[in-house]
Image (tube, rainbow, N blue to C red):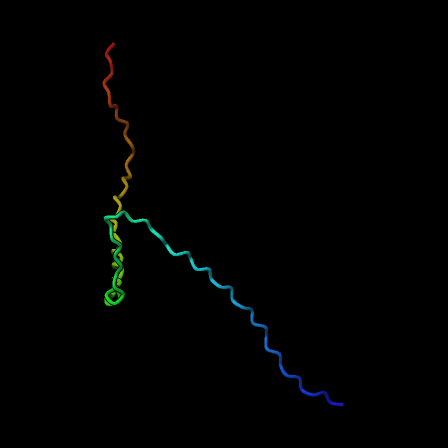
Length: 84
């Protein structure tokens, strides 16, 4: 006896956890201060242009080292001897 085709079962979708909303911010302003908000239309008009980073500096060319002398070393006294 052939079996009837079973309907595919869709995978169970887990409900996404609700992101908790922060409590509204209540600030106690002194009486002489007024809170001012930026107009969203004006904020959209401002286009932030990122400047390209400055080009890297050219590598410094080091001068050629001084040639070493092939003559023998000489000992030099730097203070005078006391006479006896």
